[in-house]
Image 1 (cartoon, rainbow, N blue to C red):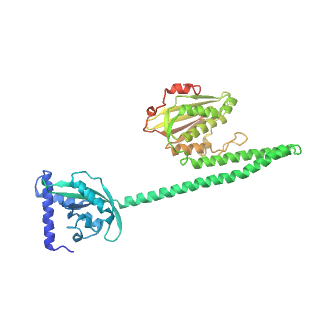
Image 2 (tube, helix red, strand yellow; image 1 turned 45 degrees about the vertical axis):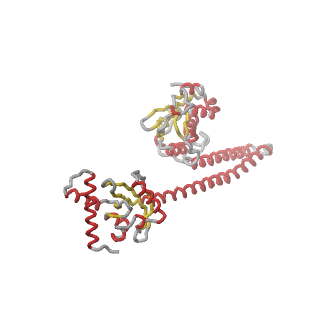
Image 3 (cartoon, rainbow, N blue to C red; image 1 turned 60 degrees about the vertical axis):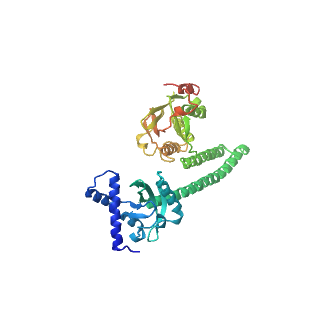
Length: 415
């Protein structure tokens, strides 16, 4: 129903009264300019504003509310909050609960709800309400309505995408498992039969035939390594993502044990400075250190191979370095050193897949850090990488003891 001129005049009078009461409560001057200022703020506010009496009926609404919902004055003013056409029936109990809490003098949490526009489209609104007392038993409730439709739609889309991503990740896991299994199966067959030939027919094979079979077995082992490295790369950031406190001194001790044969063979010395206990993904950080130590051992022709592992605490991150006195890396190879399967030497010179540094780079970056190196031919290479700090201090965990004591029981600690 359209408002008559009398109704409009009455509405204006009530607005003036409300404004006067509000400014009186705030102990502001009753200068007419204050009323004008408030009316301007009320009407120019970007959020919708409703003023309700203590029964829940709308007494005032600003322009932003009408832009928000599209309903005319006559369908808003004088209606109870539960009768507004923009209100959804399923949310009415929520409105009444908040309204009752406000009247009881309680502070109500913002209400997130759907609303219906006059054009039939649904939107999302965040409603905040407060009670303004104008007397001992009188007052009004002010409701500020902020349109959050775009944010909610983005949130819903993000949720949908996360669900889809989770499904895709599972499918990728299934796919990589199937591919690795399917690729390994024929390799195992080739490996078995080539071994049979070497074992059962070695007396009728000449040296050339035996050499061919040995090369086949070698190629099979390289292919197995390539498959495993590809699987490792595909899992970084998706598999084994639990964060835990890791004693890096003990971790390096485990890596020394893993490479014990090569360390003894080359008479290599690993020199470890004191490393911290950090919260990280254990399996992946071990992979980084293991690959870098392995490179320091493999690409090293020194009479006394050495690997230095150091840590430096920075303001926002941990800086680690793994230095060797090996063959070094030429400057011209700097761009491709972290590229997948990029090899700087032949398989006969230095065996491997060429994926180790690629794996390190992906792991470090997935943990929010960066990796780089400095090198000098025939003098060695130093790989640096950073890891972001965690807010939780390792001193808070129960099993932390003196780090030096822990190191002494694992390997030869040197400054």
